[in-house]
Length: 190
Image 1 (tube, helix red, strand yellow):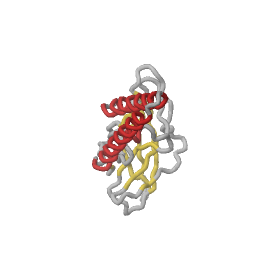
Image 2 (cartoon, rainbow, N blue to C red):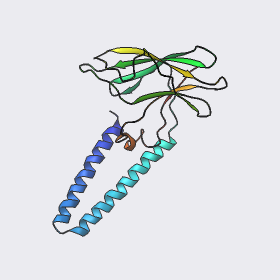
Image 3 (cartoon, rainbow, N blue to C red):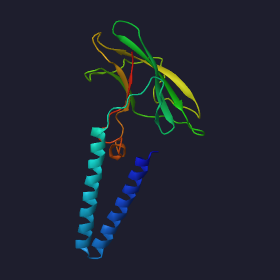
Image 4 (cartoon, rainbow, N blue to C red):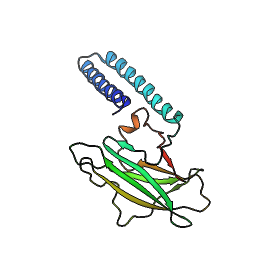
């Protein structure tokens, strides 16, 4: 959990308290006071979301090294390497690990793809016989898996991107540093 996660939780709880106080004020016949509080809360939300969007747009994409973990809580994934297996095929090996001390866990909605120098996306082919990214891992466990990508021979400056897709974006969309236009880290491959 980062400082910005804690800030979001604090602001969300503060917003809920303000909403309850507005409801109490309205029920007591103080509609003007409730309206002012709601307007102030609305302005604060707009300013905060402006900061989230601004940071997302202005922060450059992080470049990670091969073998460097990308973690979500105690679940981590790392690109271990990439090899060309043909003119257009690239096999990328991943290490999925759990840093948890007592619980079995998994991460849902993990998606990987290759990205080239002009931003084209190359999704992997189905991986029969390879562990899925959402494999259950016991405390301290890890597993390796591989995905094969077919890319045109002219694709240059390829990098692996690990992201999430298909899950509920809240609250990640509203946290500074992971907001609406956040750029997922990339791992350059030779």
